[in-house]
Amino acid sequence: MAYEWLFRGQDAYKTLKFEKKDGRVLPVAVEGVLSKAQMALSKELALRFPAYLNSLNLSDPQGRKLSLDDSGGSVTPEVNAQ
Image (cartoon, rainbow, N blue to C red; front, side, top):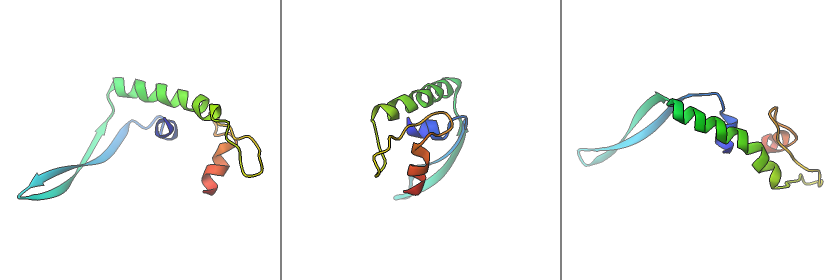
């Protein structure tokens, strides 16, 4: 879910697949676009992530509650500092 929240709205992807050729394993670049069903699932997962993260009741080293909302919330600076 975190991945979907972080990269929400980005429907194109690049990845590697590995193929065996002449006894060797070679990386092959793959590019594509999510299907409509994948886009819908990605959006649903992204929408659920803030509630999940907030349910963990995380806090920073000073004991302040960390939370997440559509704009990032108080958890974003803490994550960026790591």
